[in-house]
Length: 375
Ligand SMILES: O=C(O)c1cccc(C(=O)CC[C@H]2O[C@@H](n3cnc4c(=O)[nH]cnc43)[C@H](O)[C@@H]2O)c1
Ligand SMILES: [Zn+2]
Image (cartoon, rainbow, N blue to C red):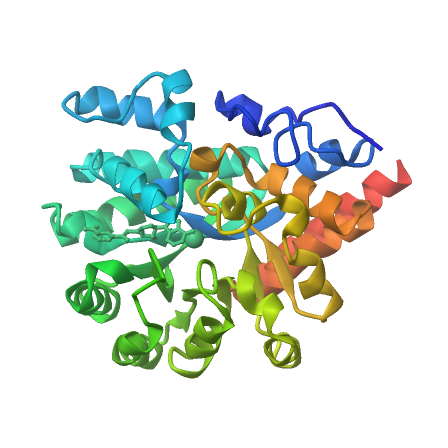
């Protein structure tokens, strides 16, 4: 069954569609049951794996590039489609850092954060944990106090104006070494700096040549300070990296965890201990971590009883958004409206939202799904 109607607020609305993928298996024409895209577009959702800079839409990138015209990042949305086509994960990081270079002042940080929240709210995202890499900004000269004030100011404004609750995950850009780990741990645990919205501590960037165990002391400090542990693992390396994240970094959720599918014992462990995976299907294709969408292991995760959440990672860079990721997951898992609503509930349950907040969003999901199915 095919639904050729892109959601009104789907990736097409960002002005960014990638040649070769749209129309195609991950683009806005990905085949799903009739009406399912409309259901997804209105469904209240939680987003658990989305990067701050990686969420800069062509509109935001253009505005930042106009402020800083010396940058090599194109301002034209059409040119951005080519610019955001990656040969491999290393190329992705190179391009990602060129966008990081556009964020030079606390006002840039505030603009980015507030506009990302607006884009999330348009997709009915009620709660999002945004992965922020403060090291990349402070090392480029943004004052640390001003950086924290900018994200917090945008967070509060977004909640008041859009009704979307934002929380932060501060991640270490692992390839930048232990200096970046020390700096990130300091910014996350210093009571004078640590922002109110911070809930978790992560580890991003390339995995190859960046062993996870070296970051243990920094995760120990973060956990001792009350933060949750949410490293990326098993995105571009094997299941042993996921084991390291669990045993050395005390991971409570795993960013991606794609290669877990190659280790049945690991899948059983994730299922038994209710360690959710933050699955980002289109990202895995865009960075070439997975060859084709039909080879994506999301079905193996569900079959093994692992708690699966669906996320968008760096949506404009990958020509997607959260609604489209739900449509992709629905196709891969052959889900109807009830199945999609169950995925949305998974994300709320796996989130670090307080119990009252979880109950509120779960109730919204149930009310919406019941009304849709009754109507
Ligand atoms: O900022 C620097 O100076 C710097 C120096 C060396 C290396 C890095 C990075 O590796 C930054 C990586 C950057 O990528 C973010 N990100 C976004 N999506 C993903 C993903 O799917 N998997 C891993 N990392 C991702 C991550 O949050 C880092 O900020 C930086
Ligand atoms: Zn990520």
